[in-house]
Length: 173
Image (cartoon, rainbow, N blue to C red; front, side, top):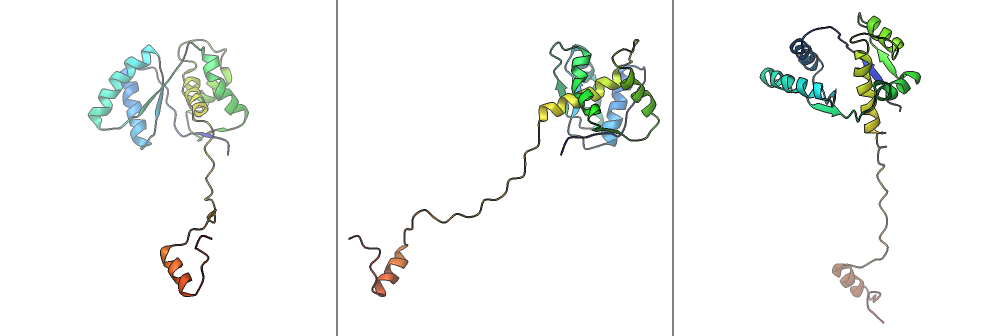
């Protein structure tokens, strides 16, 4: 089965890193347990994670970080896996108030200009990049049928019983 992305919640606001961290923790708590919280591995994100980790620890909310390397790639290159998922109709959004701005961002990317016009693309792009790292799930392993032994060695009890019946098949000739 091909991987699908179901977007259950999205949030966007121009606010302080503190408010962003609080919303991050609120969503992590709401959708617990989460297995990974993806974040770009750049300098700004590293500073953000330090503050967020302190808040998460103080509130007792586990947030397993998964930094995603940027490796000098531009936004279009980083969004390429997302583009493929969208073209294959494998991204689904729950109907909600945030659909308008997210869909608009996706449609305007990469030509939109201004501050924060591609944050939703960045967030979904992280998921597309992570799916590439994970690869295809392994197929279930079928148990192998029990094979008969390639050679037979009688037990001591079997040799004695064979001898009592007058057999001698176990003796060397």
